[in-house]
Image (cartoon, rainbow, N blue to C red; front, side, top):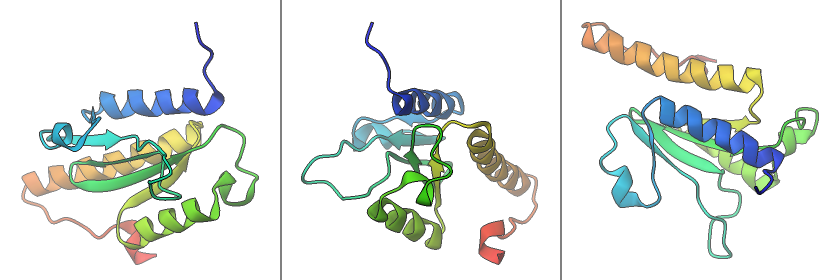
Length: 141
């Protein structure tokens, strides 16, 4: 049996969680078209790709996310081990209203992702119940 890298183990945790909340893992765009809850995609880095694009991109119930996966233990490093290009993309996504995060599988990171998912579900539930949708916390900070 092949061994898994520390980052590979974190990717498995993330994939399993996204699938558990109803997202489909899309290998190409036509598969993602039919996902009502959401989809996620692992861009394959090649010489023709975008430098610094996150490890996983997708959406959950219409909200875009981009997650940069890192092996555990990089919290003390500058930008949690992100390259300047990765940091640039993460910041741009946050500024445009998407969710972008460095994810290492720690309890703190899992909680942050689950909280974000919970906020979306709560807002959609409020809409179905006739309530108003509030402003994102990040937008008011």
